[in-house]
Image (cartoon, rainbow, N blue to C red; front, top):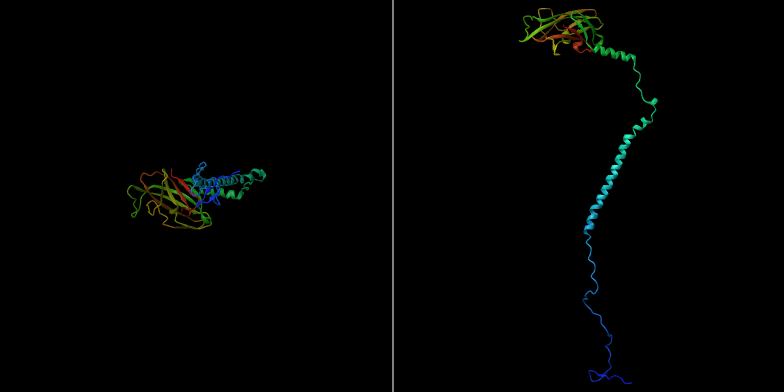
Amino acid sequence: MGYPPQQPGPYGQNQPNQQPYGYTSGPQPQYGYQPPTGPPPPPRRNNTVLILMLAIGLPLLLLGGCAALVMTLGSDSRDRLVTEPDRPNATMPKSAEASPPPADPQESAQAQESAEAQQPATATIGQAITLQGFEGLQMEVTLAKLVRKATGDQFSKPKAGNRFVAVQVTLKNIGQTVYSDSPSNGALLIDDEGQQYRSTFHSVQEGQSFGGTATISAGDSRKGMIVFEVPEGAKLVKLQFGLNSGFADQKGEWSLG
């Protein structure tokens, strides 16, 4: 068996056909940049939209849950406020229901007397009315005379378009309390239109006035004129009189016809 011919070496010597030490035959590894040989990788997803949706959606979801919880608790509280007060009434027997205490007959009589005292008593000229005042004051008052157009004295003249009207009143003390007041302060004239006129300090020739304050002891009496100034065309229908300068609850009224 023969051997293949040997190639001469660089120096004229025959060297065997062998690879340098450390190298093998076949494809050798490449170094440096290697171009991709497989399919391209999928594109990277953009997570910005997802992050925004989570940042906005989660707070809204939490707020909605809190609002629903508050509404539920509020509705439950209102239902308790409405229904709970009614429960005792629904189960309370009729016999246990509160009933007003019986009225005291004495208090009822006193209330009736007070209501009657506040209502004016009505009389006509020449008649007397018994009136009650403060602290047990009791007087019998009589409208003795009415002068529809009275004449003033030399110091008293009505204004243009007015006239003097005078009433003569008799006061008798039928109680135990001393009367000390100005009778003119408790007198009012009232016309057919409901207008009222207070007394004046004028004097008239048809009779003597009370002259201010009158002091009347028990069983005693006084008589005097009370003067009013009213328009010429006023149609007077009644006189109203009250004790304690008109502040007493009871008033007397006289129809003037």
